[in-house]
Length: 123
Length: 115
Image 1 (cartoon, rainbow over the protein chains, first blue to last red):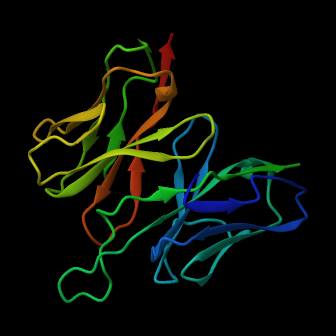
Image 2 (cartoon, one colour):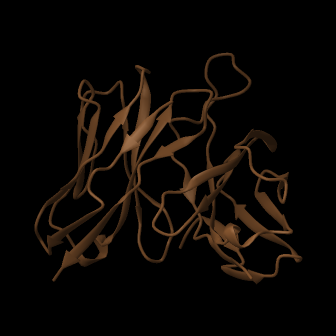
């Protein structure tokens, strides 16, 4: 069983629908990530949250809207998606290790733990 | 920008045999982290092994070990005593030290284990 839980496992939606993907972890991790993965391709980073604040947005279209309501939850709100957005959406989390006197921390050496993903199909 | 190359799109191995998956990377950084992730058809990405670039000793996790050659920028994964459950897509990944949380993945190697 994965320690990062994603719901739903499968989602089929029309291009005019609004839906949300959810991700939850209870490992005390303060960094959370959304990835998009097309078939037979590696995951592509979409967003990173550190301490519940958006720290990286990889130029993702605005029809994808992330939200981190608390340290355990990460949502991805979907609206007006296109057929090419059909993919596996993976959530991941990792610890943040504070380095020296920095308040920002460093999570580069902490491995990311992935969920099982949500298989999204856009009709 | 860093790049990760996995030159073997597919590999196969007989059960109980040993197989090595190759990975090379390009970076101008002197310190960084390298990972191997496994993704079975169940689709969860599972961390197999990780290596800190400042450590000369190769990482080992049970049947999995790496051959880390920093000067050659090579990070191969050796799987000993292969099992049917090892069949999966294997991704090599690079991560900078500090400031960037981005994992740079290779394109992956699909490993088949034959009984």
